[in-house]
Each structure stands twice: as C-alpha cells, then as structure tokens.
Image 1 (cartoon, rainbow, N blue to C red):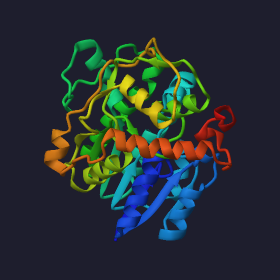
Image 2: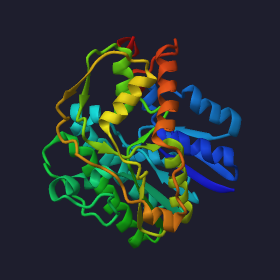
Image 3: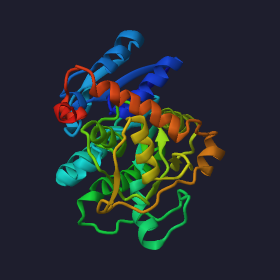
Image 4: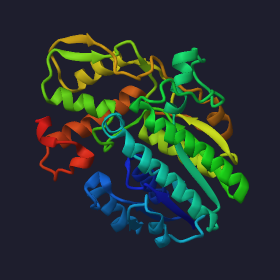
Length: 341
C-alpha cells in the first residue's frame, strides 16, 4: 500500500485524483483541505469516498503552519494541489490570492523539511508562461522550456500565475537541497463536472440558463485546448509515479479550438435558439494557448483520449442537472444558484 497525502484533495482536481486512486486500489489515502468549496463542510462526493473507500480526511486552514502538525511525516506520495484559482477570484481578491497561495506553498515546503516523504507533485499552470506567448509570439504548441513571463506585474489577472511560478521554483530548489523527489505538472484548461462556477465552461452554462439573448461571445477568435478531467487525472498520476525528479510536464491536449466553437456547441447542448453577438475579450486573456505534450507522452505514456465535444457533453449535462436540482447551495463553490434560475 502506498501512503498518499492529497493537500487540497477536496478540490475539483484533487477529488477526482482521490477517486481514481481509491477505485484503482493499493493506496492508503488522506485528504487534507479546508473544504472551502462547501462552506467548510464535507459534501456528498467526499463523504462517498470516506464511506466506500475508507479515505481519511483532515480539515484545517493550511495557511496556518501549525495546522500541518496534524499530518503524519512519512507519506510515499504528496500531491500538493491546494490553491485558490479562478478568474473571478483573481480579479476580485488578488491580494488574498497572493496571501493564501504563497502561505500554502511556503508552509508545505517547510513541513517537508522535517518529514520523510518519498515524492511530491506540485500542480502549476499554463498561466505561468502566458506572457511569453502573447508578448514574444512564442511557439505553439508550447513546450515546457518556454520562458515564464508576466506582461503586467500589477494586473490582478496574473496574481495566480505569480504564485505558481514561486511554487515551481520553490519545490524544485527545496527538493534539490533537501533530497526529496519532486515533479511538476502544468495544467491546461482542465474542465469537467463539479468544477464550480469560477471558470469559462461553468460560466457559459450559467449564462445560458439565465436566458442571455443575444448571447455575447467574448474573445470569439481566441483559442484554447481543453483538457477533460479524466485525462488530466491520469496525466497527474503518471507524473507522480513515472515522472523524472525536478521535471516539468505539460498536461493537456493539442486539440485547439476557438472560443466561438466552444460557445456555439455549448449553446447546442443547452438548447439555445437565440442570437449571438461578438464582444470584446477579457483583459489579460491570451489570444492562443495549446501545450506541446510530447514530453509527457514520451516520458509518462500520457495520451489524452476524451475529445473536447464528448467531455463538454458530460460537463454541460452535469451542470444542467445541478441547476435544475434542489440540492443544498454552497455559495463559495457553486456561486449563487438562485441567480442561475
């Protein structure tokens, strides 16, 4: 049995990794989280992992270094997934993004100093290199060797990226100095059921549900390569178990589509029969993003299998069901459900 700690294991990606490992078997799993997404409570999804698979849960605010005392010190694998993410958050509370994410990174690194953990995986983001693509016309699909660049250090949009750049440097250099193994994954537009309402696809579901007409297409000609959660989970686990020490892997797909394609297909899935109109792009949003995943394919055997249309069907159906349900509202995760009706 591999002893596994998932910091931020109740989040969107963390929950799905935990579920994948629990169903695969051979892991002694512990989730450590503040359960912010469900107003400090254990939701039905996490409860099912506890009931069905014996997953252990530790609750606390890990921006407080003292809370790490409740953790054990001999995990085989530590997934460091804890952070605050989402365009809404970075625009509304950029100072809190800096405080929370930096504290989580530093406290985890200092805890590792006095622990005997086998390997750590740090979750990063394509946002780290967005400036290189936008300002310097860096190659697309983009490899891991891209320079990390921030175009406007004062723009709140980039506070999340700044903290992830700190994390990449921090985990690599602590690992080298302290002797533990570390791999880093940069996620590229991961999506799927239960991801909250702080990202583009859930925003679309909410806006279509609200009856917006004409429906505005912001940044219609921008492109993205969306990565369905099942593929992202597999890539993350492969990076943990097969990834090289202090190596970085781009986890995503190379199926690049325009935002207009995404929105019009979402409209089909939401039975929208109204009009569309173009609207300005959001400030700080890059024109193109598509990762080169050849390193992950070569080193890890990572091969995404879910097409963007199939993944979008699954995701939109989940949101349609949720928005039509009478489930308990968790505002911090699900936004204001009443506004979506």
